[in-house]
Image (cartoon, rainbow, N blue to C red; front, side):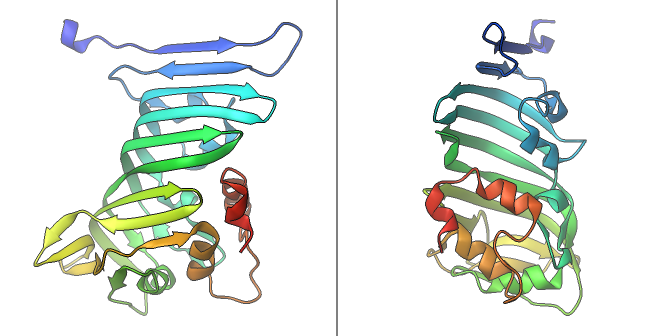
Length: 233
């Protein structure tokens, strides 16, 4: 039927006698497509995991100053462990959806990035719980061991290398971000002030003098996508 129709359109422009693409665009219609489809032209997407899928619109153009791109849509089944890989070991495990995802890139740097993260269940390490408790607007119930969590929902935005994280679901006057296995609040928002510089975020998560920022190959690759002042602190 007409309602079941699927549109998948990918357009590429490659200058004659050149191996690199000049521009590309993707329109999935209503059908999620594997992120691996674009990993060959955007290798950074491989960290989202083999099961990750995208539905929406994306386009990019290569300029002498770097990539210019726009992304709008939803990311499904993203591997949280790959996205938050730190020297502390497995700090976050689960598969999440990124809803209302928008991203703009200018001159090869991410200028804005926002969305809502939803994860039905997973595991969070005690070190990451303690780190989140140091975030300006968040509180947690720190534990000695890794904890199973349920119904994680948070909103985020990155703008000019500043990161904001906040809760969505209201419960007893709090914006709960995640519950523990007994459905008690595990992470919640207790104030509105919640913005940090990107480099400060990494230092908040990893409070080890011997660890230099960027802390892993993944974070090094991620930092190169953000505005230059994200690496100066």
